[in-house]
Picture 1: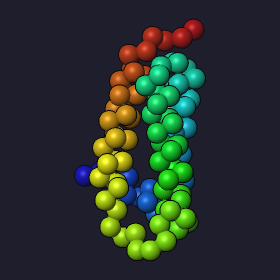
Picture 2: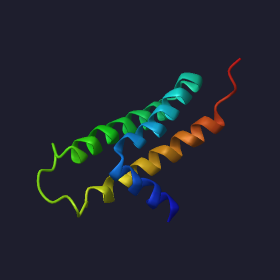
Picture 3: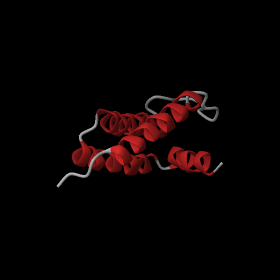
Length: 94
């Protein structure tokens, strides 16, 4: 339930999606794994999309029922989990 609350906060403040995007981007610089880069790009794309919704560019009417999030949240969570596993399994660079 805490993850849903965390992701729901990003609807009100879309720039918070930049936190995982930057974290995965920094991890990608360290590890150079494709899955980490994919997660960073996905979070960045989600930020751009959510910012468009927040600014009423992509949704000019009532956007109270967000069925699109039923797709986005599981995808973001799965990509994030995949990237975290890649980070944990990456050999330490010296």
